[in-house]
Length: 160
Image 1 (tube, rainbow, N blue to C red):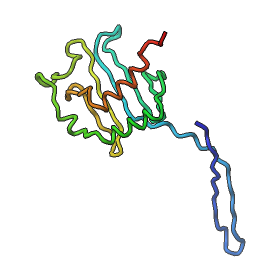
Image 2 (image 1 turned 90 degrees about the horizontal axis):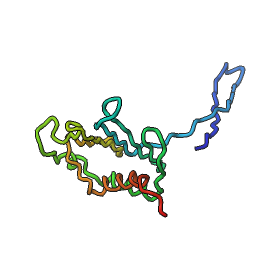
Image 3 (image 1 turned 60 degrees about the vertical axis):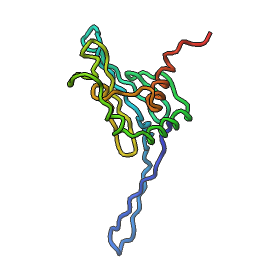
Image 4 (image 1 turned 180 degrees about the vertical axis):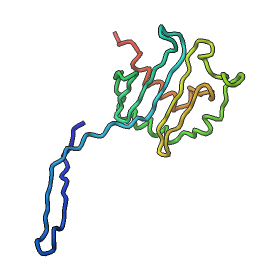
């Protein structure tokens, strides 16, 4: 992104008899950071230094990052489709489906050395959280299918 320059002016009246004093200063405006549409936090499993964690971000400029490293860039059409699916998703209904088992570890795979996932999805109304320990996430639902496809596209081997 390119920084833009904005002119900032201050106007002040010294005294009605002395007249008007105007001063302008050029000021650099930093570029806007892309907005994060989806944050996926993974935790659990066995790592050398304890519990494994990862964070994957999908931003509105299409950038997909994992633990701060750029993995790929989704097309503008994919980002637009993702935003449409986010707007169409009923998150109350998504969270209403509970995992089988006994709380508090009903859906938590980390309780058996697996890994858990929490999605934080930015909507117009704020951030919606879907925690795999508390929700039986339907990975065939269009929103989660697209999110996983965007992330999986970087894991696919190159064509020969």
